[in-house]
Length: 82
Image 1 (tube, rainbow, N blue to C red):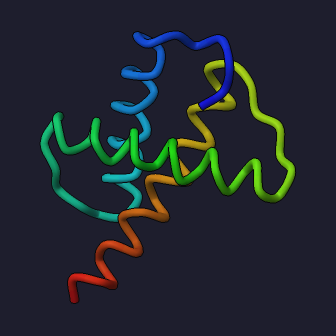
Image 2 (cartoon, rainbow, N blue to C red):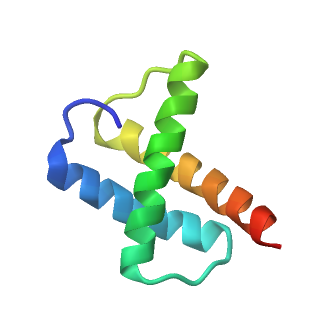
């Protein structure tokens, strides 16, 4: 995730990103699953953003990257499971 958000910020970003990804992909998860999906999404999104040279910082940048990563994760997860 972007620098400067702290551990509480990372948890909040994970929850929000997981929730947004849940709504975008028309899924139905609980709070803990949203947190896990958001954190996984942050890892995926951060890796991909750095790989293509995008710079993201602060709460909003980390939230955008985590959300996009979470949506990608849920999309791939559904394809693997079906």
